[in-house]
Image (cartoon, rainbow, N blue to C red):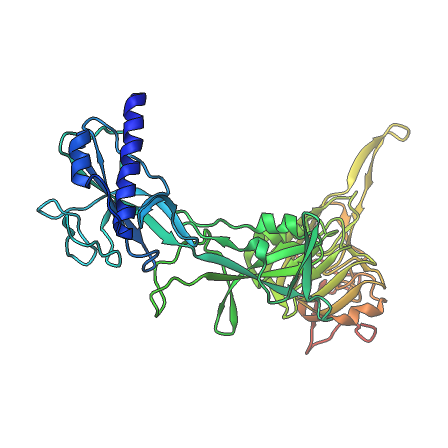
Amino acid sequence: MTRKLKILLISVLFVVATVCVCAFAGCKVKYTVDELKEKYGLTAQVTYFLNSNDGTFNDNSFVKDLYFEAGQKPMNLGSHALISGSSDLKINVGFNFTGWYEVEKDGAGNPRYTDGGSYSDGDKYDGTKKIVMTDKPYDFSKPLEEGEHVYVCGDFFKDVRLVQKLICIDEGDGTFNSISYTDGDTTVTVEDGAEIAYGSRNIPKTGGLDDNTAALQDRFEGYTVEGFYQKVGETYVPFTDWPVKYPTTTNAEGKYDDVELYVKMLKGNWDIVSTPANVARMFNGGSKNYYIKQDIDGNGREISHMRTGLTGTIWGGTEGHKLSNFVVKSTIERSAGGGAIFGNIGETAVIKNVSFENFNVEFTVASGTTRFDPESGTVVTTPNDANISFIANAIDEKAKFDNVSISGTLNITLSDNSSVTATTEDNWLFGDKDDKTYDKIKVLSATCTIKDKDGNVVQDGSGNDRIYTYSVENKNIQTEEL
């Protein structure tokens, strides 16, 4: 478009707007709209409709007509609209603009309403009915033809917010009831149950809002996002249906409700354990703090024993959770010395509100080593005598246990030149049995079986099979000290 045409178009739009304003105010003007169209040769027409998904906004003036010369490109009003005579008036706060779209027409070429009726020129547009839009955006780059009349509809939608509220999860002492974060130079404190302003956002009409766990985690230093929940009645139901979509249904008043999610926060830095893969990761290194978010069934998944031992915390939350049906499978080399589910449980270790059910431990003791002794000219064999237990090889007396139970089996397979002489009927459960803290680990049932490489049960020096069992009903292991 030439500079002259641009100036002409702007002038015409200004005059047309002035006509509308003055007409609305009851004043006189020199030219009518028809006179202006004839004077400037404006033969092409564009009718702009506005749709809102939440009733009406402004004053129901949802339609405006602009006129152009043939060959000109129609004006893209962007997120602005000609409402109540203004040529540049933004839609009310609380509404968002999606875009301008082509509209569906009836057999006579008139735009269709969503109720099945039609709009025709000269009618008063009923914005509450809304025009039927196609999903095809209107192409404003296409020049208008002589006498062409184009209908476009702008899609506006009311803001609907994702409101995120805080749920504090403490360890039962009741001291954790708020979180704080820094916003610039200001420290913001959010009480338990209140809205997290930083986490609440407007929901776009298309696409939705993605999981913002990482953003919340970065903002709330010293706390851990445990997860998101929706409240159904008085119950909090885990929410995983990301992204959060714009609502498709209205309430009884025909309005769109905000979407509420509850963010559960833990004080401190925790690794969240919610899947069998998370459990496997936990047993690869026990120095961190692990929060068991829910009951987890391993369905026979193989994991390793905690080779480095447990020095951190395993917490099943205030209600407690269980890990079940995992297979702890490892080969105990001579250099490793020993093995158990938790290895050595250190003085800083804490296990609280967790049940380990049907943990089937399968240890293979590697063969002893052989070497050639040049002095004697013979091959020297060093047996591999491993220290193997079911739960732990040793537990520090300062370790803490609260509401912990366990059940399962320990199966030990010996290779050539290997043994487990320290694994006896008296200490196969816990290793060093003299620690008084063992009474805090409730063993529901457990069995230890020691076999050779051919699958035969190994016997002790008295000719008895090395099969040791323990249950609450049948305590055939020394338990007076446990």
